[in-house]
Length: 372
Ligand SMILES: [Zn+2]
Image (tube, rainbow, N blue to C red; front, top):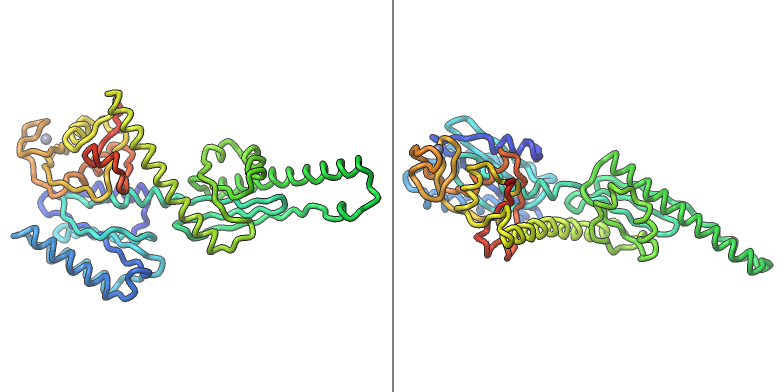
């Protein structure tokens, strides 16, 4: 089993096979939707039928039976909601990536593994830090896909007995209140320090804080600048909330954060297109920019597929068979979008996979921010 990281995705994207194509399969095995294994086995069968129908004369029997065998006999669904399998039986290439999130079902053939869906997942893999804090208590939790992977707590009780003294003069009452506020403030500082330690020990992408407006302002002020720049939208659960409710709210924040990342990239693209500066949209211009190695960020709508051409030199094109770079004869590929993602990964570009972003869709479902 391969663990999903940027490095493992690059390794997958690096496998190329022009003579014997690679079969890539994404299968949703989420136990919450597919209670019985029979449910997703049937889905796999129907994906296989579609693939065979759309590729007359080609034989993928060896690849497809490897996949069926794995799903039917070897899959342990514990902690697994999605499966990515890549096979090129003729070259004895076989990789399985078990995913803690569900995926859209997809079976396709190309000259290298289709990795764009993995790219989309690896970004949501970054844990989310959550700090719930009031004047006495702080809870720090680390979430991944809505599940707690780490928790710590801090309790610093404020004195209560002040209130019961009735002989106190007005002046000393004010002093006492001031003292209590100072203690609370100390607690905010300690909470900010504790969450920074968690950040140093475990690392997380973004931080979401749950607190009243007043406490939020005080804690934000005490945060290390590294954390302040990682602040995500606020989480709306009280410090005393149970972990199920916190997990639900954290999962929603994770989705919001991912959506924000997508939207920010699309806005950047729109601005670049508007000003005619370092932005392009549409498959043909994007392939051209990839051939010239100018792509810094590739934006692509999840599920976008288009056939095209691939040259031995690595060049991609919509129209063939003559390579736009060296005039050689190119090979037809089923999914040139997937090859575009691979090419972008190889040149170190960032990939942003957008879920149903209408602004990207009107620009042809693919675009790029350019290095120059
Ligand atoms: Zn070429």
